[in-house]
Length: 260
Image 1 (cartoon, rainbow, N blue to C red):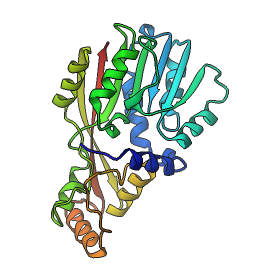
Image 2: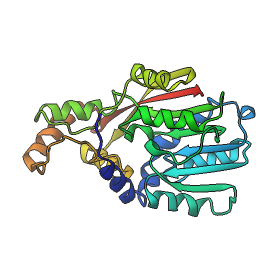
Image 3: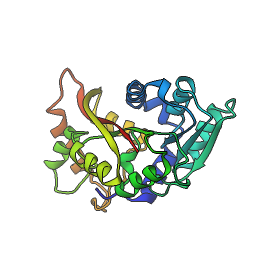
């Protein structure tokens, strides 16, 4: 998977004002993710990687004991949204940084969380190595990411039009486990769940992806502007899969817990 860092940063910066209105799945996945951790086991300094507009950070504040919480995001406008929402919480620190280059000293963190953010990192070796270095021994990494079946319907529809990559590809459970084992994590547990969302049209799906910032980040895609004819062909192919005047989109979510 090869993503452009500039494209990711630009997409999420532009989506900061529309993200909350389109992030129902992200909120649902985040709440399920937090259920996997015993609140009694967490305290100290916690990190939320890819905090977005602050939903998971706020939930962590409410659910877990902590001395401080670090909200980290690559997009400054996203971080500003979190800061505005959590202005009353003095124990939150805000860091604008890349998950592949975490600016933390060794063994300074008591827990790391990330909700549907690490799929935008192309170098997971470095991501997990950085997290491993920053976590204290035995402390948890808890995160969710999209799996390879995500947007399978959209991929299939585009495949009827041309051979270019129009949709991001995501790592499998086996690949994620390999990354974690290589970085030195233990007690690795993975769970995959497929969510199906319905939309009034293909264009409504694509608009939501844009509002979430989850678009135009594929490196090696067709650099030419997609023609109206190609778009209509893709939409026609996709709509043949729909039911009751709705189209369906699959989002495979892989939830992982591991310890340093």
